[in-house]
Length: 348
Image (cartoon, rainbow, N blue to C red):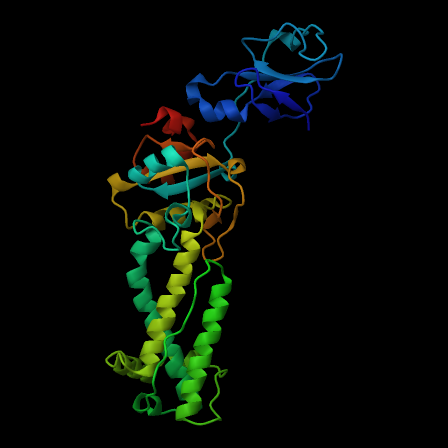
């Protein structure tokens, strides 16, 4: 793939090896100019030295910059159309607030870890705002599993009557998915220790318990344990659920996130979920071309998102949605219209 220099912005640009002349959009000009002021650009291949030039159609050079051969008249004296179709997967969207958008404009998009030095998610982010409700649900779910497993060993309320000293799970957060493995090992060790200490060495932890976890007896025992916050199993469930979210929070704090645009339904579903704790006037949507974000990977916890641990420069080509309401974002034609987006350099 040839490399040439854009006559408008002087950036080096990778370009296709054209046969004669064709329209082309310089990615750096696209980044730096308002949509209605973008110059129509042309790729031209010198018939003498085969050098490929990139210049504005209205300001063609007189000769090749390499061999000084005169530029031939373009076919039919016309410039090919430079209108490129909108392809959603070529873009990424980031949902935030206007206040954070100004910080991104000033210093780029960075993870909470890069900004604060701590593996704690932004308290204004959707993860932090959603945590309280999700932790409560997770504690109940974990208790159900413990109860069902205890009942699978001996179907009575023996485990409620028994109690042992509890030692909190020590876990140093690394911001990596391996933390989940460490948590699971620690949880299983404590649960098996409880079972063997109270019921005996024959206690088993690998018994199928799905049906038991859903019946009325388990629900009755669950409600009993929830009134016993000092009980070993209640403390273990609380510890596990909170550490599980601490791990997710540390991973969140170590990355920056974008909506996954490989599937339009996931894009829309993720957007609706991310704005549910934000007021309409406290919502901002940024977009950037996928090629300008490095280190991108799928979010293993949520297929609707992709993430990177690398910061994204404020000069990387961010645009902000400046037209319509946030509900308009869900319209395909709205997202595709460049007039609804403003480059950062022209915003604020």
